[in-house]
Length: 317
Image 1 (cartoon, rainbow, N blue to C red):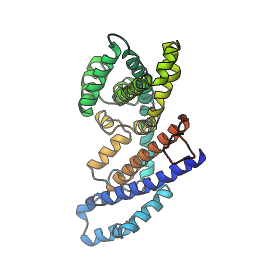
Image 2 (cartoon, rainbow, N blue to C red):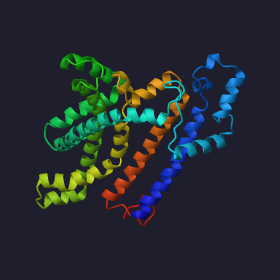
Image 3 (tube, one colour):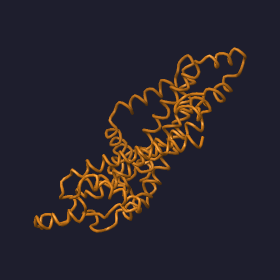
Image 4 (cartoon, rainbow, N blue to C red):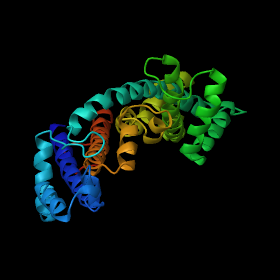
């Protein structure tokens, strides 16, 4: 087990280094105006001196090495336009708690509603009318087919009118938390329900389940002890990734409700072309994606006894 975790961590570190390097090289192709607060008033010689001071005149490998050295010190650089000269790490430290708080609440709601809905849909497939399966399928199709920007906007427009709450977020008014949290949760609700339903239906049709029914084991015990337990294992690997992304907030949702969190911050610095902050935030989101995949693999290995830690990675015992 320890060797498996160490191997996955090492693979993830290599992947992370490659991803950050590619992201950095791509973002360094942005117009240099984004590295200055008063670009229009500067002469070409002043611009060249500043770019050299920032290390942007160095060869690409040197830029990447220097950036990694900064990251290891916890230095994300300073803002150029959003708050000129202010450390980016301190800006993010003030924004992240709001996104984390909203994300935790929405994630708890998504798990509390998505998993029972998936179970109800899977059980409903064995009934005559398949009521819950039909209801859940319609909901999944709507959410998956309609662009998220559209239904987020509809939730804001009609939800604020229905609930008689302000359309924009106010940290001191708990009523304004309802719609953003629901908007963040609804995608994960249908995601968990869809995949859990699929895995449970697949599991329910396997031979060992038929044998358990033939032996007279009750459906409730089969569903709880065998079907749900084994069906939930493959879903586990996707949960950490969705947790991390949800905790950091949705770019669109935070912008839509004017939430002063991480998502809205990224949209804002892109608009004003604060290159250094864009680099820092994109790198953070890249790191979160790799960490999510790593945690998913580790949880999958811990929860699934069929995975062998002594054979080639990914093999089954």
